[in-house]
Image 1 (cartoon, rainbow, N blue to C red):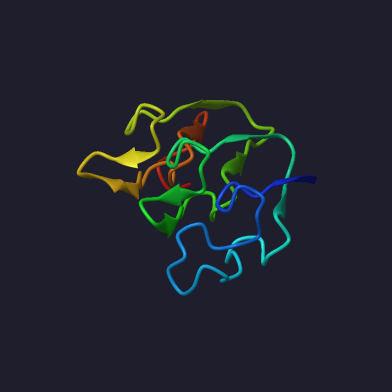
Image 2: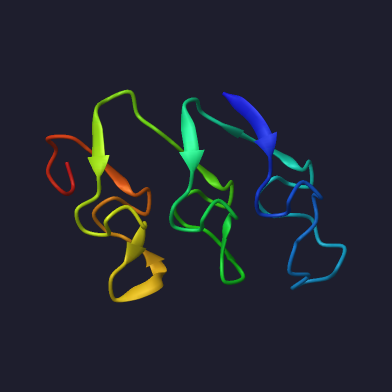
Length: 111
């Protein structure tokens, strides 16, 4: 595990959008400003590493901004071509790769 700066609040520990209050604690890091991400990891393609899609926490990385990369061989997702976005609505994550932009080589869509 790696302890990295929370992408959703950019390390401030506060809700970056101030929806409840400008003093609200970040829902992703619980106010600490850091999150744990399993190694190896890479920036989440669905939210471009920001942890947010519009004003919501990214469903692919759960707001952390990074997704773990499996040790298995991976290939770019043929459905979203690595963007992590659903073709019909970019606010939704790709159903084939679940927003990660890659699939494990040789596996079926939901295997």
